[in-house]
Amino acid sequence: MTNFLRVVKAVTPFIPAEVFSDELKGNVGKNSEEELSLSYSLSDIWEAFIEWSCYGRGVPTLLNEELVTQYYVPSLSAIQLYIDPFLSDANGSWNLSKITGISLDKSIDDSNSNGKLLYEFFETEVPYKRMSLTDKALSLASTFPELNTMKSCDLLSTSWISVAWYPIYRNSMASTFKELDACFLTYHSLSTHSTRYPHIKVNGGKKDGKPINGAQDKKPMIPLPVFGLTCYKYKGSLLCPNKDHECEKENSLLQAAEDWIRDRKVLHHDYEFFRSHQWM
Figure 1 (tube, rainbow, N blue to C red):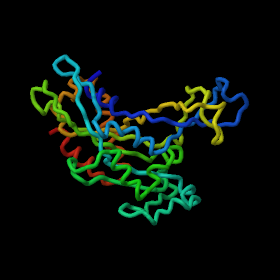
Figure 2 (tube, rainbow, N blue to C red):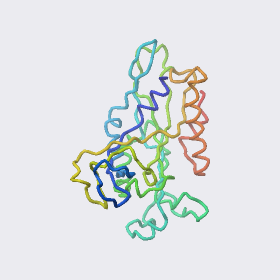
Figure 3 (cartoon, rainbow, N blue to C red):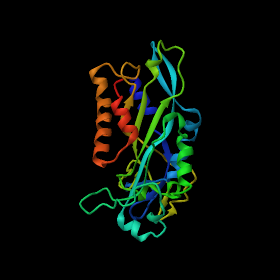
Figure 4 (cartoon, rainbow, N blue to C red):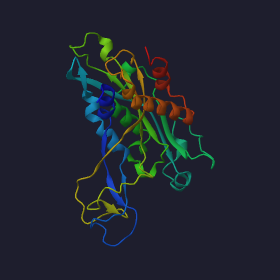
């Protein structure tokens, strides 16, 4: 595994989720083969980032044939929440007119599958003045509570979050600071709206909002995988793959981030900066 892939793996949080049955069948809970839906609240994501926000995320890094730990601190770079426009019209609690400081008039017509934009935030503060990710999310939630209460199953697949990762520890074994100075911008989907988990047995969870077979408090943990990524101060760092086969995953994630921002037609400030300084 390359140092680059170690970063991607390490910055993938796992979120505790509730299990829901999609169909009303008999014998649910007895090793049923039916597919399941999982859902979590956005507050579960912020909670998953608490420790990383306080102490940084430790990433094993191969340095001079020895694994050392490099730390990165996460900050909230961007977020967009999209919902079904019919759901937003039916739910009076989602009063978009009360939100300030974000674009509100972004209802999408039927020819576009994005859905209706419920909320968005794009960070413009310089990195050293930013709050940690969890603190920033909770601060934003103070004026828009749905950032805590919204369920992943109610969000469309166009809902996403971007996290900026900056190094906070300069390992003493590095010959130069540049070797471990790379920064990353990762992209994660927030929706479980159309995701199914047939490999999970129904021995717990909920059905029609009620626990299945007396489910216990233990919840399945599902990843918030990195689907796109871009870099800053990357060239010449220990994280940059140097073989063709090692670059395949890297190039795929870089292209996915570029495609995502282009398709969203948004001005993501961190993305523009990272892309313009990617190979510095």
